[in-house]
Image (cartoon, rainbow, N blue to C red):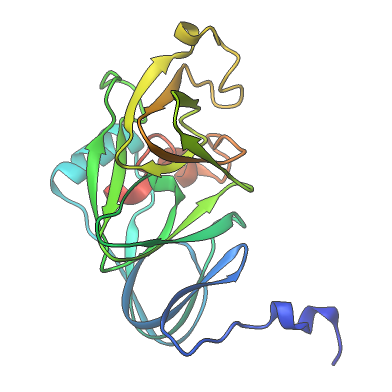
Length: 240
């Protein structure tokens, strides 16, 4: 049988070391020897002896999730030995290596998977009233890899001057940055930003660090009911 489909670029990528790697720009491969965390519904294929366990919810996480993000999309624990392939609606996948002392603040809807050696803490973004969405972000620390998604090729902005980003386009940023929210009309933008999402606010960053911005605003209802609920806040489904 012959076809360009069977070219080397489409064949499974093999490695001698367990862990995360890109199968291609749209798909993550985890060569599993232990456990990892992944977004529920992101598994597209697996080989070997692999178990999937949805994580329960409780405490303040459950309250905030119900208050801000509806049902959202929970995380699952993936454990065992084998190969697991993950994707999220053909979004671009990027792998970030965190070293001890690093801290990455991330929009929860952009998290695809991460090593179980990493920890995350829910934090409130300052400068916005509690009645609005997008109040919380997640700060990852520890030593390990995290896979994130962007809707298109992102730009990494070096923050060395006051920087403003549509909240729906902000993917992740240096946790050391000072963040806040400003009404669009305060910046003279009025209704010119958030043309697809109706955002009345823009997110501000100050200090020294970086912000990763995707070239697309996450539109409510884009991928169906659960996705619409997931995008109600910056944490997305990570509050489960």
